[in-house]
Image 1: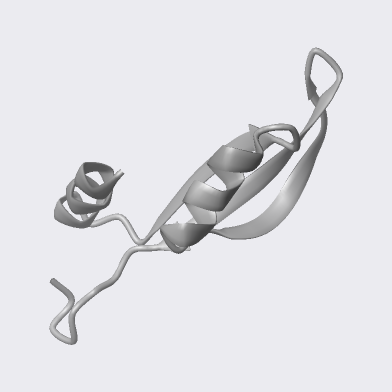
Image 2: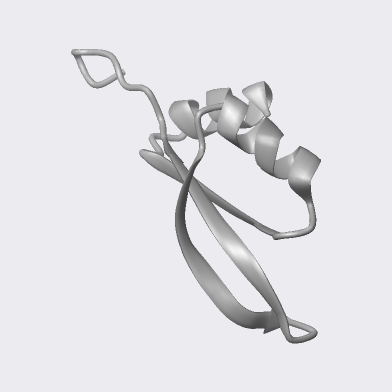
Amino acid sequence: MKHLDALAHEKGCYKLFLHTTWAMKEAIRLYESLGYVKEGYLRRHFYVEDFIVFSKFIKRSENGQ
């Protein structure tokens, strides 16, 4: 996940998104510990399962790098 953050920063991305199911409690804790926040829901997304959408802003320095 740290490599993904670094790669996203290198490519000029400002925000990352991911999603998981409600049942993945360990994954939810991991994502929240890494700074992701719940942003929304995908109702009946995959095999009629509801998903939680998480997002995280990529840290940018004052000079935009």
